[in-house]
Image (tube, rainbow, N blue to C red; front, side):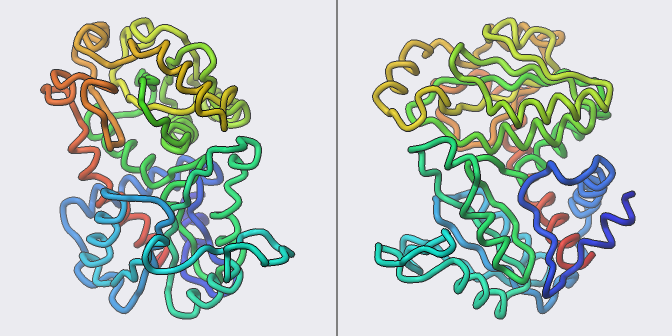
Length: 349
């Protein structure tokens, strides 16, 4: 199965293979990415992507993703064209058949086809709209680019998915814990003044479940994850002989965990209602990963992860994030190596 997956992931001009979510890929393929990332961490083929160009399109802010992708392409001998919506181009209309008499002077269809003629792949971070969950969960913008582009499209984070982060997360967990199967990992909702996207959690669940990770999702009442994503993760976990369970007590959720992954996300119930969301969040400010919660982990030595940016002493205390069991900087560093593996696989095969 691995060979057939890898054989399909080469540059093409009519039917590109995109990397939008971990869901379509099997464990063998994902494991091949982790293996390749680990090899690249200890020795990079200098000119593997010589002459190849990657377009980076950011409709939302970025620090680690932008920097790591640029460095990854440079180290592989390729180059990046870096474009930011706030300064380098204008609004783009994603909806097909739209009468374009609004603010967008260009359609995604036209931009995607033009850029496909210049570049070997496109990597796109979309902006979370935050008004209507049923619309936002469709990830219409990144899927519009994938539909119209004639080169591969990489999702750098959308409302529902962040597959590149998931590969780095699994790489980090595997480096720290060894075999992923059977490891208990807690995804801990934490209070945050501004809720973050669901993408990090969704992609980690969907990818990690294929490896047989025993996931516990701990969140307050009213912060349920997307029902379809959660069901898909549970199905993958069951096939791998594992499970995904949900609890509503943070300390209980951390109990016995080998790793605690802190992340904030919005309430689907009050999505698009900022005042209601603010009141709901204010009732859950005690949801912070602190030393007491980490003492409840396996042997009191559970690892701590966070995708960053992190609000210190809101999401996690300084004592934990700066402590000996924190993996946040290794996790961030592994973005570079995992993305080199993704780029090399998509652009080189």
